[in-house]
Amino acid sequence: MRCSWAQSEPNLTYHDTEWGVPSHDDRHLFEMLILEGAQAGLSWTTVLKRREGYREAFHNFDPQLVANLSEAEKVQILATANIIRNRAKVASAVRNAQAFLKVQEEFGSFDKFLWDFVGGSPIQNEWEDTSSLPASTPLSYSLSKVLIKRGFNFVGNTICYAYMQATGVINDHVTSCFRYQELRQ
Image (cartoon, rainbow, N blue to C red; front, side, top):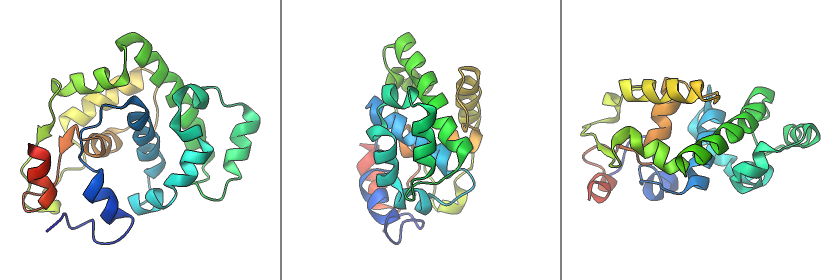
């Protein structure tokens, strides 16, 4: 059995291989930050279907390259058919890349900064069904507040909670899901 939201592609593969897996790779952490922000107001399926387009448009999520995108490159990205063409979200990716680099410089890595919020170990929730999962928590509020203060945007409470789930900071697989026990260990 698996979490009820993962019944068809691309959610199925994402759930089975990536969602909730603790990530300590800065590039992956940056990718998920940008994708979670792109998802605001849309379904996660919509974002996953465009993930390869995002990888192409945003230089495989190299934060240094994204931070230095020119106005012409941003216009070109907005003309790309296989991403979510939203001017504010594209501008946010650049702004977030710049803030991400500052965090890396200050902490040595974004990984260290993020995982310090949970003392280095994932939170292991014990939800029996997906209807019990919160949209946000005091922890996601704290992360959101700190990120906004550091110049990030599209990082509200709900986005931060989804980000922590996606990067394995929180294990929110339901207890009956086969991934729950795999990721608890």
